[in-house]
Structures are given as structure tokens and as C-alpha cells.
Amino acid sequence: MSQYRIVFLGDIVGRPGREAVLAAIPCLQEELQPLFLLANGENSAAGVGITPAIADELFDAGVDAITLGNHAFHKREIVPYLDSGRPIVRPANMPIEVPGNGWVIVEKADVKLAIVNLCGRTFLDGYNDPFAEFERIVGTLPTRHVFVDFHAEATSEKQAFGFGADGRVTAVVGTHTHVPTADETVLEGGTAYISDVGMCGPYPSVLGMDKDVILRRFRTSLPTRFEVASTSGVICGVVIDVLMDTGRAVAIRRIGGLTSE
Image 1 (spheres, rainbow, N blue to C red):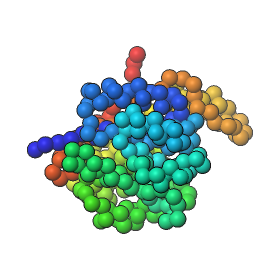
Image 2 (image 1 turned 45 degrees about the vertical axis):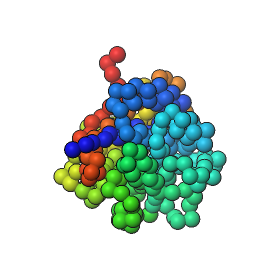
Image 3 (image 1 turned 60 degrees about the vertical axis):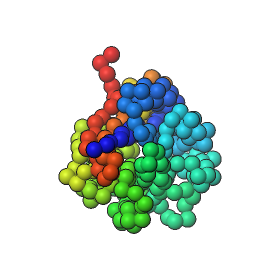
């Protein structure tokens, strides 16, 4: 039974994250041979938001679709780009008047993959119910191959969403918290799941930000402007193997992360 592969890279943070991703893509393509390469780009512009130039850079490097999150609109110049027809998605559970789309279809080798972006509501304000929005969307998608980037703070909300979507989508991957979790699994219904894939960004850092700045904030409680760390970037992501005929996942594993070198 034929299979294909999805590689998804976690939240790209600032220039170090972009440089790490751009450097890694040729190796990922050669070694893993994914049919689809996806990435979350919502922190790629100086740690907050994304610009058209950065999105184009990622697409030109081989990224097939970009997901976003709660920082989707932090760079105003991205607003018209979201309606340009490029495969970039902002959270679907936003008011209908918001520019852009919450899901997109990319097609390769006769496989139509739907990429859906949703934001959780626990500790994140301003979003409609992601569970209800998912129910509205999933029945309208013209394919059984569905990849969901669930951008949320609470692992409990992510896990609940994963179980709720199991058997109806190919994968539910968590983003936003920038720290990879070790709970990757294929659920009973054939949906690949992980609570958080981690970030592609500078390390050592605190979630991609300069650790000294963050330490000062915790120690003094004074307002502090966060800055992307200037250290070298690492990548974090997952690779998912999928059955071509059913869209069900058969394996998921983490890639990248820190090494002992």
C-alpha cells in the first residue's frame, strides 16, 4: 500500500530560525523525501508576525504551505498577502470579516492535502470556539488528507482537540509553546498527534528570546522589550508517514532539536 510523507517545521523564530530552516531544507528534502513540506511562520519576522518577503523566501526554498497563529496580523504588510492566493493560512476561528483563509489545499502527485490552522482559547483571547469551527470546516473539505496546525497554549486543550479530531484528519500537530513534547503518537483512528513540535529558532534562549532579557523580566517584574536571541538556530519538527489511499497516518516521529555537539 503506497505511502507519502509530510514534514512539518515548528514555529520559525526570527532571523536565526529562518536561517536554520533555509539551511536545513535541502538536507530534509534529500534525506526524508517528503511529498509536502510545511512550516509555521508566525514568529519569523523579528519574533512576531511574518512579512510577504519572508513568506516568499520560504516558498522559494521549497515550503509548500505556511501556517500562522496568534501573531498572524502583527505585521500590517501581510494583510493583503493573505488574500493573494498563496498557500498561507491564518487561524480559521476568527471573525468572518478577517482577511485571509483558515484552510488551503495544496496538491502534488494526485494527493490533495488540506492544511487547516486553528487557535486554542485557553490563555489566548479573541478566538471563536476551535472545536465548533473544526466541525464546520471538516465536512466541507474536498479531501480525506487533512493536516491541522492547532496553535494553542494549554496541552489539555491540544490533547482534547486531538482526540476529538481522531479518525477524521491525517494529523493534528500543536504549535505556539516553542518547547517540543515527547508524546508523538498515532491515535486509534489513524490521526498522527503531538502536543507541540517545538520551534525553529535560536538556542540557548527562552522560547527564542534573549535569555538575559527574559531573566531580567522575571526578576524585576518591570516591562521589558523582548528581543530575539542572537545565538545560532536549531530546527524542530515532525515527519509523518501517510497512507495514500485513506489519508490515515501510520507513523510520526520528531526531527531536529538539540544535539550533544
